Length: 479
Ligand SMILES: Cc1cc2nc3c(=O)[nH]c(=O)nc-3n(C[C@H](O)[C@H](O)[C@H](O)COP(=O)(O)OP(=O)(O)OC[C@H]3O[C@@H](n4cnc5c(N)ncnc54)[C@H](O)[C@@H]3O)c2cc1C
Image 1 (spheres, rainbow, N blue to C red):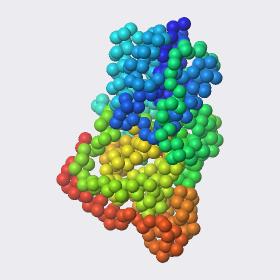
Image 2 (image 1 turned 90 degrees about the horizontal axis):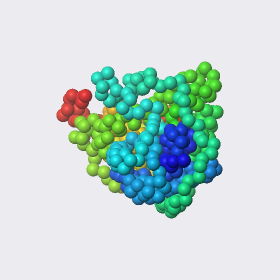
Image 3 (image 1 turned 30 degrees about the vertical axis):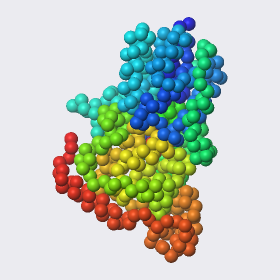
C-alpha cells in the first residue's frame, strides 16, 4: 500500500475530512501529520488562547486516531523542510491537505504545492472549512461582494439542502515508526494559570464539537432568533472555536439543521442561524479578496480619520474590564475568564473602543486575537471593521452604541453584568446599567468600582464631530 501524508492543519476531525477521505479512497496508507510552524502565519501567528485550545484539540485528535489504530505524528519547523524530510523517511508519494484561506497560509501553500510537484510528489488539496469557497461567488460584473445580503443570496443558490459528507473511517492502518514531538513539548499552553478557568466551559476536539451541536439542537436553536442577543442566557451554539479549528465542518452543521426534525415554528430560528453561518462565509470571502484588511481599513476614507493616540492607561482599563461601564467590563471580563464573549457584547465593547475612546480598531482586534478561543482572522477582521464602520456592509460610524441602553435592552435583569462584575451585584437594575448616574449608591454598595474612564455623552459627540469632518473632506463614497 503506497503511503501518503495527510497534513492536518485547522481540520482537526476525522468525519467529513475530505483530505483524509481522499487519501483512503485513493488506496493510500495515511500518515496523519501535524506541523507546528506558527511563524508561518505571521503577523497573525495564533494567540495565547488559540494555542491553549490547539494543544487540547491535538491531543483529542491523537486519541481518536489511536482508537482506530493510527496516531498523530507531530513535527516542528519550516513546513516545506518537514514535509520533504518525512517524504524521505517514509517513502510517501503524495500529500493531502484541506485548504486554508488566510493570506500567509495561501502564500505558503502555493509555494509548497509547486515544490512538492516538482519533486514528483502528488499534492491533493480540498475544501473542508466552507460552504462556498471565496472564488465560487461573484457579482454579475465578476467582482467580489462587499454587501452581505446579495453575497448570501448568491451563495445560497449554490447550496444543496444537504451535503454528501464522508464519514469517519472505522479503522486506519498503523503509521510508520517515525520519531516526532510530544504535543505537550510544543509549549502551546504559555499561561496555564490564566486559562485554568476556561475548560469548565469548553471541550476542545471533535467529540466536544458534536456534543455542543447536539446541545444546541436540543434546546437553544428553538429560540435562537430572540435569545441570541441575550448575553445572560445560553442562546447561541458556542460552536465558533470548534468551527475555527475544524473540529466540525459547516457542512455537518448544515446537514444537522436539515435533519434535526424541528417543528415548523422553528423555521425562523433556523433561517437566522443559517444566516450567521453565512456571515462566517462572507468574512472569508472578504479576507480572501481584500487580504490587506486585517491591518488596514477596507474603507480607505478612514485612513484620514482623527483616531486618538492610543492611551495605554485607557487601553489597559478596557482590556482588564475596569472602564467603569458595567456592560463593557462584564464583556471584557467574560473574555479574560472564559476565552469567549457573547456576540452582542463584542459589538458594544468594540463600539466603545473605536467610538467613545476613538482608538483604532486594530488595537482591539489584536487583543481579541490573543484572548479569544475562537480567534479567527476572517471573522475577527470583519467583526472589528464592521463595528468600527470601516468595513464592508458595516454599521455606519455615526451609529454609536450606548452601553447603558444596550445593557437595559439586552440584560434587563442584570444577570450578565452581575455574573461578571460581582462587586455590582447588590445594585438595583436601574443603577446597574449606568452606575455613574447613581454615585452615592455606588459609593455605598461598590466603592471599589471605578468611575467611567470617559464621559460617554461628550465622547460620543466628539466622535460624531470627527466623523463629520471626515465626511466633509471626502464627500463621495468609495465604490
Ligand atoms: C468585534 C468582533 C470580533 C469578532 N471576532 C470573531 C472571531 O475572532 N472569531 C469568530 O468566530 N467570530 C468572531 N466574531 C463573530 C461572532 O461574535 C462569533 O462568531 C460568535 O459570537 C460565536 O458564538 P457562537 O458560536 O455561539 O455563535 P452562533 O450565534 O451560534 O453562530 C453560529 C456560527 O456562525 C458564525 N458567526 C456568527 N456570527 C458571526 C459573525 N458576525 N461573523 C462571522 N461569523 C459569525 C460563527 O462561526 C458561529 O460559531 C466577532 C464579532 C465581533 C463583533
